[in-house]
Image (tube, rainbow, N blue to C red; front, side, top):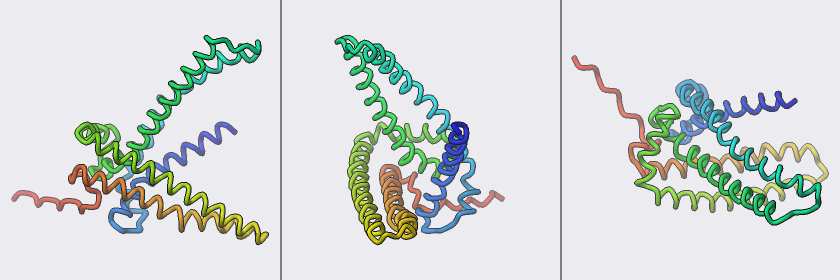
Length: 231
C-alpha cells in the first residue's frame, strides 16, 4: 500500500509539473489547448519533475533529522515522566529550528512556482539554467520580491477564507436538503467555477510581477519572429 501511494504521488507530481506549463500557455495566450503545450514544453516539464523529486528528497533529510532529535529526546522523558531543563531546551531549540527551516522551504517552493517556472516557460530553459536566470534578477530586485511575497500571502489567506466559507455554505445547503448526489455534484462545481478562477488570478499575478521586474521575461509578449537565414 505504501509503494502504491508513493507511485500515485509520483504520477501526480509528474502531471502537475507538465500541467504548470500548460496552464501558463493557455492563460498568457488566452487559449484553451492541451496537445500543443503538452508537446512543446515536455522538456521543461520533465526537467521540473526530476529536480522536484531530487530537491524534495534533499530537503526532507534535515526535517527528518530534526524530528528524530526531538523524538529521541522526548521518548526517555515520557518513559521516566520527567522533563528536565536540558531535554526541554533541546526539544524547544530543535522545534524552533524546524519551524524556521520549514518557512525557508515554503519560500523556496513559492519562488519556484511563481518565478522559476515562468522563466522556464518564457525562455524554454531546463531547471538549472532557469535557476541561474532567477539568481540574476533576484538580488537586484530583492525588495520587490519581498513585497510580492507579502502581498501574495495576504491575498492567498483572504482567498482561502472566502473559498472555505463558500464551500461550507454550499455543502451545508446540500446536506440540509438531504441530497448526497447534490453534495457529490457540488464538489466539482466548486472546483471548476470557484477555485479555477482563483488559481488563474494568482498565476496571472505572478506573471505580471515578473514582467514588471524584467520585460525580457514577459510571458504575455508574443515570441520574437524567427530571423530569415542570410542569403
